[in-house]
Image (cartoon, rainbow, N blue to C red; front, top):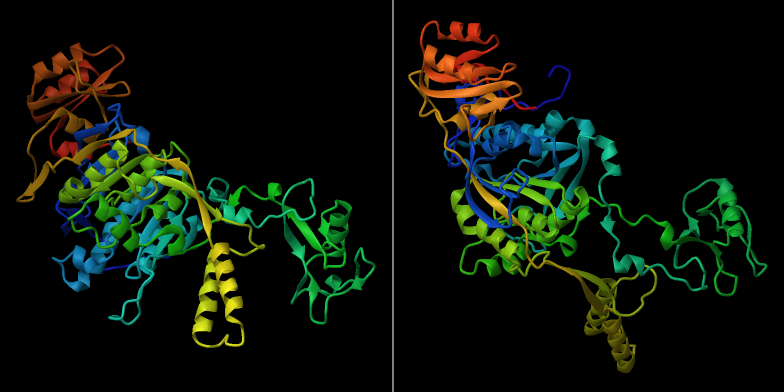
Length: 586
């Protein structure tokens, strides 16, 4: 880490061990229990699945254990390591509540250590052109930003989205919090701009393009036109209008275009001087020439992507009547925007802290593959799995189930939206109510009020509706098999699939061997490995193969015999040798 900025905290040189129930304890980084690769066991199938690694997955268990399994077990790793186009992490914000068994002085350290491990695993999951989005509030945002710089590099930082999570105002606090932060990182750095998606152009945006002069090239928007308060003397030249009038910018102002730009635009017939030819020049920018979408901004207002309250009141309470919803559920439109910016249909989306399953629900409706990990078995049973089943069944009417295009009900002037007209109507009503428009006739005010009301109306057109389909598998992280007693490492059983996962072998369901890795076969004996076991294993090999035999005990001379019978083969004694010879699948 020499020469690089990094964050320090209490016990940074130690590691966290999860107890499987949301609790953590500090252990030495060399603790053998940290090295265990947990298995993933199927608990349910919903809808249409293949049973293969590319199914959508809902995993109950700690995020660290689940992501380690996906990136290290040979059956999973090829489909997940370096394959995720989007990893979204919405970790617990309030460390005091999440880690109540620790004192306040250590809570922050636990949170940082927990996050660092998961960020490292997220980095392993990310595709070269993928992106990581970490959702936080004020409590840990600044610290996590430094941690992200350390893990992914400052060059991978794309930006920080500020989301307006609450439209209201709390009066019981110093400053009423109205926003969250979402830090965005991409391994490709600036190159991510070439693969990220633009926001769809809206009817309101496209409605600003008009064609008052019947230009055969289609609707256009004013581009470089008029004057600006800053510029150079080169941009104070005289312009002769078609009417014959010569105009210059007023004192202290400058044309927004150069003489060459104006001359080229006039030659191309791209300049508009008004209907009479006596207006200031406007250089046209045609709708068909602009990029097909909008560059995402870092400010995401509630009116565009919803709030916590929207998700709670308008969606979760309808899905789960009578149940107490999450305190800060994320609205589906928020996750839709993230997913549509970062991925395309068919891409893989991973959520390490699934909660009620919003990310997976939106990804499913938008045709993305997904993996959702949730630690709490109670949450999975009560919320996450039922919600995702509802999505598959096409019985979820809320969120982003339906796509609508909102457009003005009648044409509006350039740059004017129905929301702005509605605001103007409210302003006029307030001024009239305060007596500030007493000089205006009541009839005129009535006409104005009605016309503004008509102009503020919008038209909604349904263009897509989710009707169900697809499916997912529910998995659970297996309980830990390693345990420490009196400084000794214990292993409760020696199932072949567990041994294969620790050593990086692909499981073989049939035949004399338990696994394979290249030209090496795996044999597991849940007992003593003797000369007979070694000889039988070698007899089952092809001429170009070797074998790794794992047992709880090894008789003297057996390892040497095996090396003689088949050079390159070896005998391992569980559990200690599983740690010394473990293999990480790359």
